[in-house]
Image 1 (cartoon, rainbow, N blue to C red):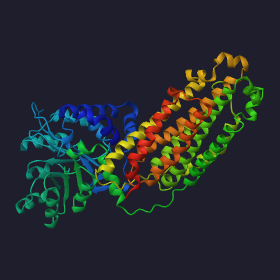
Image 2: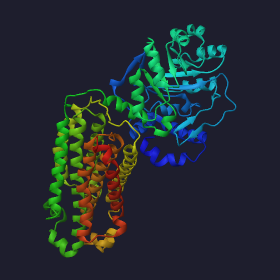
Image 3: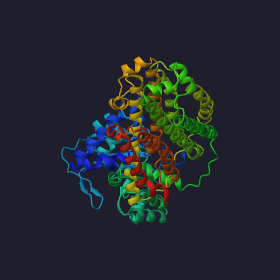
Amino acid sequence: MPDWSYHGIFKPILSALPPTLSREFIHRGMSIVASLPFGMGSHVINFLGREECSKLLHKKINHIDFPNPVGLSGKIDPLLTGTKAFTNLGFGFLEIGPVTIRKSDRFTEPKVDTKNKKIEFPKKPESIGLEETIKKLSTLRKKQPIFARLSGSYDEIKIMIEKLDGLVDGFILETAHTSIFSETRKPIYLTISNVDDSLLTEISALSGVVLETRLIENIKVLRQNGFEKTIITSGGITEPEQALELLDAGADLVMVSDGYVFAGPGLTKRINEALLDRLILSPSPQPGWFAYWLFGLFIFFGGLLALLFSVTTVILPYDEYFLEMSRQSVWNFNERIMLFMEHDRMTLAGTMISGGIVYMQLAKHGVKNGLKWAKQAIDAAAIVGFLGIFAFIGYGYFDWLHLLFWLVLLPFYVYGFVKTRNISGTPSSKNRRNDAIWKRAVYGQLAFVLLGFSFVLGGVMISYIGVTSIFVSTDLSYICMTPEMLDSFNKNLLPVLAHDRAGFGSALLSVGLLVLLISLWGFQQGNRWIWWTYLVGGIPAFIAGIYIHFAIGYTTFIHLLPAYVALGLFVVGLSLSYAFFCKN
């Protein structure tokens, strides 16, 4: 659940529910998605939120490998209903618990202070018990280290360590039991609130500590007194800047807790992107990026050529050959047939021009800088575009010019695909605060995601119509003829019209994927090029798509309504995200 869906859709609803019901509803829902068969759950989560992190953030502490230093406090998921989902959300490690021997029969509701963005968690452990914890961990596919927080008497903790030793990577104790350290080779950390001289001696035998109050102050005291072991903080983070401050003060690892609820599930990703942003990176240009750029350039020029034909001859010589009549004959029969064809071909041209611009931008600013998500966006859209050629023959008309065009494009795409197959870079971001600019951008991202989804859906529907019924009711009202009348005039006319419709649908689907994937994966603060890609890339498609309808008099409101809605989302997205992308 990325921030655009959490803040824009779910949070207003969840806020009206009791805290525990809200928590369990969202965690169970996320875990259902994560449990989809054949590993599809992790792919769906990655598709929506893109939670991968850079190898540059890797840490090795106490002989444990951490993908990044940001973890999740067990307070967020005490019943482990969301653990399967959380393993896919980009965390460097997870804390579970507090784990107790027996299941807790009663517990108080967490108290949510929305105004001050604080949650008062129950003092009595809310636990599913040791046996149920073991069952859940046994079915879990671990992707990062897991620490178990244990609560109970000395004998109970000793039993829990023995039972959980093979399932977790370390333990967090709420009470010091120094004699228990010999029971496991796994690291043991002690939770502390205040640091004093007597405590420094007591924790010297530990692997490290977990701080839960006065975080920066306690970190500094520990480090100034020569404490060199692991320091983990829990809580105190609602925005990336606070995590950076804790790490700068001397913390080795940080855990998000109540701040994660208020900031949203994207907080971990934002912290990791901020950490990466602080590293001075000067990657050499990724080999193969220029082939992708040329691929986009040829699509751009192909769109210009299609635009030229749409405003001049409309019907090309090979169309006349297939129809076995001249364009003038079609014009004399019913001029609106020619105008309708101009309408489909100009919208196709505008879509191709926009798609070419977006491809070139992704290649130059994304793939060239080693960003894996940019390559994958190009690949997804390009492959769908290539496969779209089969939609052209749904009614029996194969356009050889389109085939020739794809044959020209194919070597450039294949070369770029092969040369970039090992690309692995992840994005960085200038974002540090949950300020008004970021909050507006979350809704701007939602607008662009909806725009991308609408283009994809529209492309699928138009392609389907193109290979089945060809027309919608408003088309026939505009042409003032039935399909039977058109077929009786010329048996090959319907296949030509179906070809145009399916071709436009395929192009819209391909460009829709580009818009959708950029919106899902490319929303990092300071990416000025993303905003300009939206603006410059969107203008040709919107101008061509809306202008042509007024130029030919096809202005039926219901027919143009999807275009108006898409234009509204486009303008809203640009307006809300401008400062996020373009201002320092």
